[in-house]
Image (cartoon, rainbow, N blue to C red):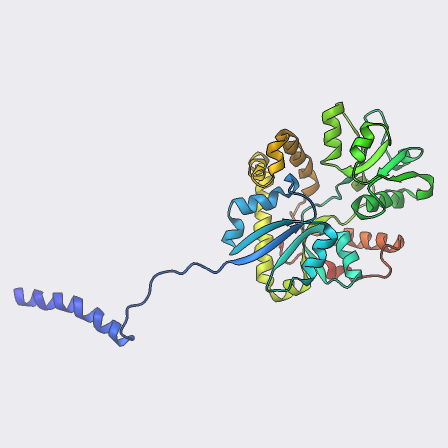
Length: 335
């Protein structure tokens, strides 16, 4: 009996060894290697700001890391970021935050860029004034001094959209190019009305004066607003990477809606100025931003809005010729 037990014990040791030898002489490696991480650059056309909270949430909660991405945030002027996106190539995956209008204008210049995720569902530029200045319709702009940074960019397109929708010629308005000092000029009564972002200057005005008059451009004409932009080359040759980045950002946006207080606290780590200044102001900025991001399907691009924006750009000769609107965006990575 003892001898039989000894034989069985030897078989337990010897048989697995023989099997390993038959397979090449070495035991299989059961250790797991970490998955490769792809470096990605995300360009913003503005300074660090709580309006980018969904991106900060996605980064802080590890959603990009789970998707195999290491994301670097950079902050530049929008005209520069679209050029960089178009020329980055697939070996240096690059995304940018910009408007649908900018995409169509860039494509006119031969830059093959596409929007793949629409962050802002409504155009956020408004016209604002002190609370005693009536701003209930575009007609209230008549006989008022109106300050805009210049005849370029989002503020200029917003003014033109209001006039386009209401049939008011610009020649009937007193429009002044005042640079980016419009808030102070309003306070000092140097101008009566100015353009700005709904979640910025009007919030500051309410803080200082207890109220503000606001005329929302989005209430009169739909303009293709801000979202994630990348190159056609990247969407076609590295579609899995684009989908991973979009879906991780979408999770960040969903979490921001689910718990905006948490999103705000996360954002403070990415916005040094907020900690040094007035955090409560930044909290209000986030709350004012949320309605502009809302959609039945978050991040989805509305083809009708893009067609209307395209016609608007053509009618104002901002586009010299039609561009392929359907090639300017895609919803394939949001769905």
